[in-house]
Amino acid sequence: MYNPQLNAQGELIHLLTTEGLPRRILTQILDKAAEFVSGGELVNQKFADLAGTSVFNLFFENSTRTRTTFEIAAKRLSADVASLNIQASSTAKGETLLDTVHNIEAMGANLFVVRHSDSGAAHLIAKHVKPGVAVVNAGDGRHAHPTQAMLDMFTIRHYKGDFTKLRIAIVGDVLHSRVARSQIHALSTLGCPDIRVIAPKTLLPTGIEQLGVHVYHDMESGLKDVDVVAMLRLQNERMAGAYLPSSHEYFKVYGLTPEKLAYAKPDAIVLHPGPMNRGVEIDSAVADGDQAVILPQVTFGIAVRMAVLSIVAANQRELL
Ligand code: CP
Image (cartoon, rainbow, N blue to C red; front, side):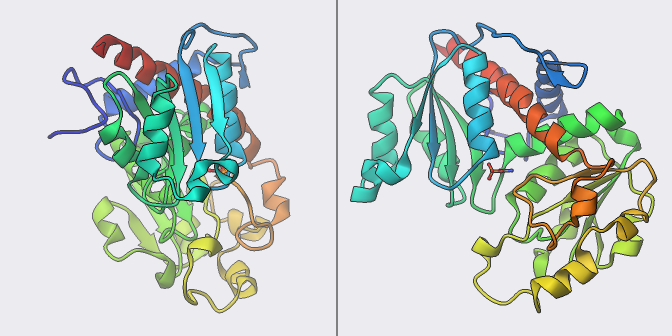
């Protein structure tokens, strides 16, 4: 089936979503990222993979981790990097997304990293850029956040090894979460046999079971014997109506406390993509506790983004 992320040889030329990517590509990203990590830390070295490549960060939505780690990743690979300040750009004067992109292409862009509140924005750009220009989705609406999912996969593999032996629970606001969707597709392709989602009915999309996940509405049964607990932020900015009685009630039932974490395996790890709402979806005792790998996720995010940038840029160069 046609996949706009792959060239005729089946190699990655854009990263827009984890959905539909073969295991071979996901593993290629993880293995390439592993080259940039040693002893759980980022290798403190510059690489020449993107020498002569111009990378433009277009973040139409707020970001701390993704934007900064993409910038670090591109610089570590020796790219020329520019980050458009959207608030101070001509977008504020009504310039369309594609006009902005074409103008930046005219400045010599080879690679766009795009975050946008509209689902499908990165796909749209990928469809309209010149041959040889790559697009990496840094989060689009509720749709996808593929590099977040891949850094989560890297973290899980780093601490737990073989995906085919793991039980993983994704907890919280699945309905509004691009991270959850991208995690589910990646975990499923990597062979995870037991992917669970735990959430109130109001925060689950209808038909989520069709993605091959097991649905739970309570933490005790959902977390039982899991190896990985992947927490999600309550996405208040994407909630138009009343999905919950209150954040206090939500924390009582779904907030990850040490008591609830005890339902999981004793050596279970806890992930969170950030930003965290402490006291809403996660207790500080867990967020700052021994089982949390939330800060290593951020470090590994640089390695994974280096891997993605390096792979798509190399495959795009071959097209020219
Ligand atoms: N996880 C994540 O996407 O964080 P930012 O919004 O800070 O980039």
